[in-house]
Length: 351
View 1 (cartoon, rainbow, N blue to C red):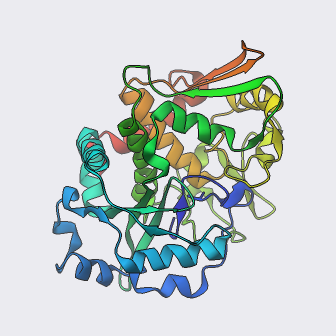
View 2: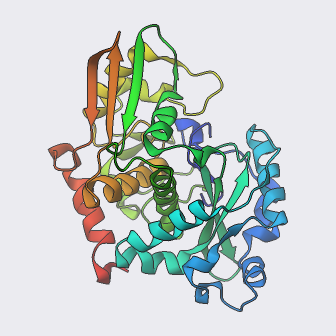
C-alpha cells in the first residue's frame, strides 16, 4: 500500500481498508520513518542503488527497524503489536525463489525495479503485507513485502479455506471449502506462492496509474480516466469508491476479512457468492477495495489463467453440495479484465 497493504482485510489492505470507502488509518509520523525512505534500503543492502541487487538476494529475515515499524503500525490499526523475529527456513526461501522464477519475464523485469525485499516475521497480524518506499525527488519508487512464517505453515487449500471463512460466523451444518490445487499439488510452497503473487500485485501497482495511491485522501474527487484498471469495475459516489455492481451485490458492504466480529452468517455464503458471480470481480476478498481487486485479479490471473490451477469455493449443507463458485477467466463477465492483464503484463514492450 503506499503504506501498508495487508493480505487480509480488517484493514487489507493489504489490510484491508475494511472494504468501505477505502480509507486507512492516518499514519502520521510513520510515513516519516527512515524505513519508508529509499536511502534506508540502499544502506541496508550496502549499495548506491538497491535495484542492482539480484532479486534472490533481497530475501531475508527482518531487520530490527522493520520489526519496530510493523509493531507501531499494528498498534495504530488495532492489531496485536507483539511482532517478533522469525528465521527464514530453507523451504520458505526455496518457495519464494521458485515463485520469482516462474513468473513471466516481463513481470520479473518489473519486480527487479520495484521490489526492495521480502522479509519474514512472527505475529504479523496477517498472512502478508506490502509497504511502499519513497524517494524525496522521485516520489514512490517501490515496496517491500513482509510474510508471517507461522501463518505460512499450512497447505494452499487449507490456507485458502481458512481465509475464505473469516468474513463469516459459523452456521450449523454449513461448511465452506476452498480449492486452489488438486491433491497432488497442494502444498505449503503453493500457499507461499499465492500469498506472494498477491503481494507482488501490490508492489507492481506502486507508482503506476492502475488505481489511486492507497495513502491518498479517500475523500478526494477522482478522475477515473486516469486509472484504467479502476474503470473496469469501480466508480465514485458521494466521495466513496464503490463497485459498478452495488445493486446486484448488496452484501459487499458487510464483507470484512479477519474481523474479530464477522457480520455475515455462513448460511448466507451461497447467496453471497451468487451475488459475486453476477459482477466482474474475482473474489470476495478482492471486492473489498479497488486495491485488493487489483491484487486478487493479478493473483488469480497468474494462478488460474496462466498456470491452469483452480479457484473453487464449495458450500455444503449437511454434507451435500449447496453451491459452487468456480473462477472462469473465459466467462463474458471477466473478458475485459482478462484482456487488460494480458495487454499490460504479458507483452514485453508493456514495461
